[in-house]
Image 1 (tube, rainbow, N blue to C red):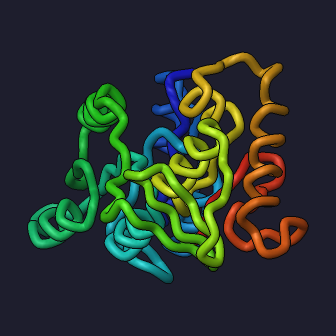
Image 2 (cartoon, helix red, strand yellow; image 1 turned 180 degrees about the vertical axis):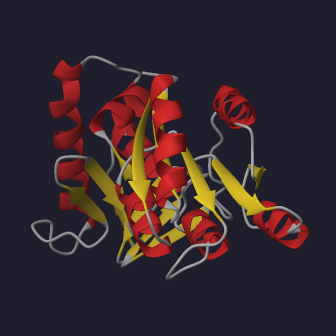
Amino acid sequence: MRGNVLLVEDEEALRMTVGDRLRNEGYAVEYAANGDEGFEKATLLPFDLIILDVMLPLKSGLVVCREIRQAGLVTPILMLTARGQTADKVNGLKIGADDYVTKPFDMRELVARIEALLRRPPSRPVVQTDDFHFGSVHVDLAGTEAKRDGAVVNLSAREFQLLRYFIEHRGATLSRDELLKQVWGYSAYMYTRTVDVHVASLRQKLESDPKQPKSILTVWGLGYKFKS
């Protein structure tokens, strides 16, 4: 499989046409037919690329794009715009879209744009400051120190690396496999319990009620999500 793609498009015929072509090219495709559904799936499920139409029911593609970026996701976004809508293209790029294709488009161009986006090295969301706060916790990212209610929390190096990764990807659903790869450098499925143990330890040290966490959340069947 070449990647997981979310296609947010309200025209059923176009959804089916694009979806069939992408599956033939080796991609797994998930659909959304309106802006609300698109945002929900984009922030709940892990995708390698999001194809987002500008004109959508309930919530426009431009709003969805902005909210995806505000949620901390860096998944590449390819916008679909109507011919002549230059303002939409400019606005889309300004609020976080990576590229756009103008309707009507040639499927070969769409596939080429997708391939180009997926070849880019993954970017990391920018943490605007070395100081980060959530709940009663203050994290000094530069000083690799965390405090809760003003008292220093004793975190292991790996626990702090995991916390940093959560903060840098806040709002995104992170699978255990991704966390193993990015924080531990592992790829073997057998080590997924390692993630659970470290998450439980972070909750015990940082959450007011570890059994009902408000920041380090479990997304059942998928992984974890950090909310500030």
